[in-house]
Length: 418
Image (cartoon, rainbow, N blue to C red; front, side):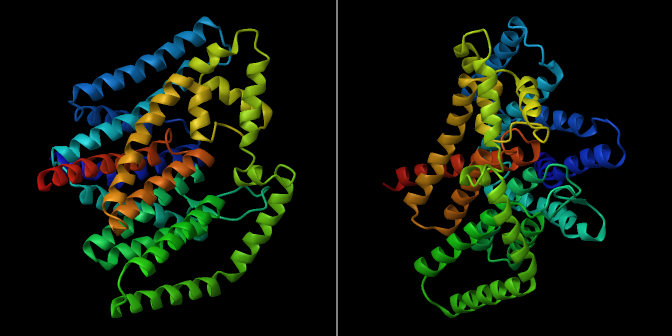
């Protein structure tokens, strides 16, 4: 029963974002069905957290977040909206709860790592089909008509969240292919690549070719040369040539647009171009902090609050609705304590993934696990919409949990055989 319910949650989780999109963009109603279902999922996942240490850590995080809300009230920060702040708090808690709960699910053998990855990959059918049928009029454009860029994001509102999710899942397809040698995972991999191209985001295209390049280099240099390797290499060349042939005009158009964007975003400032001027968000908040009559150290410790920061950056530039670089977002929303807490939770699991790689040098499974985590962290730092974005937080948190438990298993096996 637990396995089936968890499978349903993982596979159909993107539908909650589609429900939100339809309510917001099509029906124009504010019906919080998706928020209610996510709250139920959060409560259900908490039931898997039994370890005292994890419960204490969750309590510490909640304590810091509540202290922040009390601080904003004492300081009488007028822009703060308790309901918006609560939504952010629940998303941040959800990310940590996902990590802890999935670690326990793995340790109790309710699901194996391969089960989790299989269900995560199955969820991409919902995402990729939604994107690929968008040109038929069933979906939304990635950018508004006023922006000189093209792309389709399916029935989703936040294209960066979709991009981040697909970049995190993409290497998992190859993890599963190396493990089981089933062609369906290569098909999933290709569908994700096509969807990332159709999204039209810089991070999606760069991330796609980065992962593909690492995979090809690893495959060519580490594995032995066999007939199978010759066949795969030939397929890669044919696929790459075909993609360039069919997508020649869109690719040239994209390159031309990026050249224009580089000239307009930040006055030829490369960093501004890479982060699509999101660095302005940092400038606006720091400028706001410097004008406050209170000591800045207090706000660095506890943050300014979710709704206040969003108001500040929206006032600076109307396109900005939320702090889109996650680590800066957590710092400005919740302060140093919460930022250090979340960063530590992630880095411990990154360390575990790196150790898996070093103990099993260039094992394709662990390489792809590390690539998945790397894509999640990179996108959260530059593009955001990973740590406190519900859809990507579930899949990124699950991958981090797998890395920790896999390392524990390998370390225990080495201890037994040493």
